[in-house]
Length: 263
Image (tube, rainbow, N blue to C red; front, side, top):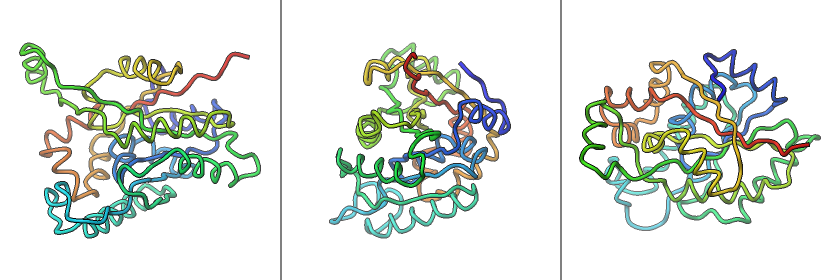
């Protein structure tokens, strides 16, 4: 496991790995920042965030839209896109909104995004680190003792993996196969609180057949919270009270980077 204690260490690690460009694939308009704002800010000059689900699904207002204070789905996504624009400007990252609705990603679209990335530079995806959601998450503790221990330690519970995250991980993992890109997986918050980072590595190995190197970065929690709070419509229902939000964000940011094949 590699521990990156500050922004300089993250940049130095990228340089040692020969990475000139970082591309983060974010399923939703908050996942990248909630999960790895510290890392994004540390290398913003070489980082681009591509967010997939940025458009409303036609029809009646969803339960989530109503729960976050919106009368319809279009109003929700207009607000969320603007929140993301503000956060990316604050970080200094380039960004792209792909305009999909939740559940719409299919394999051919992932291949198209990967092909477009490969064609943007003369060297294609060489010297590029593409970071995918890990599909982190799991059920809450089943036993009374497990629940009491978490409550006593004031640890967040986490959540079950999100379908859009797992779909994004799997489609892009296959779309990038055979490319020159380095591929890694980031532990999504708040989902990742349901499992340890070692468990997440084992889960990725079972799901995708890849072994990974774990890289952890402990961000400045106050600075990260200021960025997270730019997603005003989402932060309270997802992260809870300011005190609980701080506990969620206190978990080190974690990447599991696929090991290069021998030879």
